[in-house]
Image (cartoon, rainbow, N blue to C red; front, top):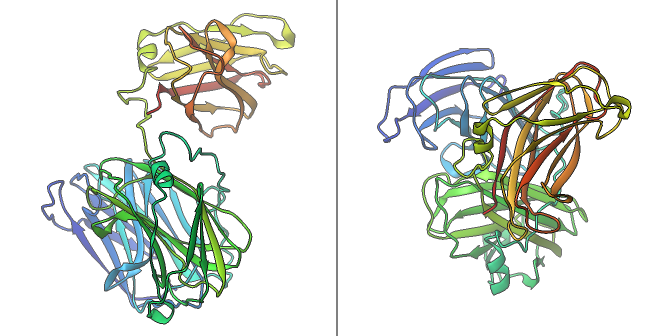
Amino acid sequence: MFKDMPYTITFWYADENWSQLTDPALTSGTNEWSIYLPTANKDQWQTQMAFHTSMTTNSVTNYDFSILLTSDKDLNGATVKLTQEDDDGIFYFADRIDLKAGEEYVFWKSDMAGIDIPNIKLVLDFGGCQEGTTIDISNIVLKEHDCDDGTKAPENTEDTKKAVMDWDYSSSSNLWFPIYESKLAPAFWYAPGWSQIGDPAFSQDGDVYTVILPEATSDQWMAQMHFDTQISALQSDKYNFYCVLESDLDHPGVTVKLTDANSDENFFFADRIPLTAGEEYIYKKEGVQLSVGDASALNLFFDFGGNAAGNTITISKIYLEKCQDISYDSSSNLWKSIDESNPTPAFWYAPGWSQIADPTWTHNGSEWTVTLPEATTDQWMAQMHIDTQLSALQSDKYNFRCVLLADQDQPGVTVKLTDANSDENFFFAERIPLTADEEYVFERSGVQLGVGDASGLNLFFDFGGNPANSTITIKEIYFGKYE
């Protein structure tokens, strides 16, 4: 639909103090555009680019959308929003994404429930850009889902990954857990045909909310349920939100929106999710931020507009937490002091279980590199460990992160963080396969020692099973308390 549609482009570009600047330089080709941003800024909506069209969509058709974005410098929190021209409150999505320097980002939405919109507007926002950033935009596609143009969903996008329920809703870090305990009752606005009727039946059993909708509705926002909380949030902080949704009947789109109680325009996300009868949908939003400013209180909305009569929907395992900064340079990174002390690792390198000379290795800043000249066949035949004086309490939780990169496929690299005095008292011991030349981010949150306290910690990497002449890089190790 976008391919042959006339459009105009407008900008709203401001410095970090919200003083409007001259529009950025724009070059364009066939379904491709490039903009140059000479001035840095720091907040969302300070670098807006809008495509204005006369495209229409309707509520009886489902749609797909995709776009390719590449920035030559890191840009965290770019926004992609597909909305109605004259009403920013009516939209398909408003997602924030992180662009890594030089890496093409495939943004993809598939089988979106349709909305009656007479004039589609696509808004891209690059607020938070660095000085002198160039952004390339291409291959904008908006099409009816049933129209097969040969396009295949990319295998590595957030939309196509199978999400898993891997959080503990009862954790002390869950800001929503007190809401469960207080049995906060939701408010409703239930209006088939836009005429409000009595509230649907609602119940809570532990972490499970159940809603029964006796009458059908046809449009988004006709069946709203919201929890009004006293949870506050800062725009500068990032948050994770998870929940599980299930419907006993097919549903074209349940809306999930976490927003400032005082402004519907200041929200973390507002996604519409189709549900298949009897199938759990695991909803995850990670690293999200408020779009406009701080919020003294948050409201969580679920909208069931478009439901069939007699529809029962459950929402469970709601989890909201503030993200910790687990980047290498974070002030909470206890491992950085280990890198700065430049320790010598120990090895046990034994092809065929007969120990030979240590492999060659280097350490430069946050990066460790190991070259293994001979092949090994089994786990634990190629051990490397860094012994530290870092201590840890069993009662405390910790975060760990590192990046692994190999120049050849590896059937399994083992990562184990353990008590220096007991191999049985460890945080984790996991074997990770690596694909040649592809970085693997190994990240574990809220891990604890298995047996007791540790006065010192050793970090093991085992490359057993490696092919000959393998070079493996380990970098940006993070270890710090989970808060």
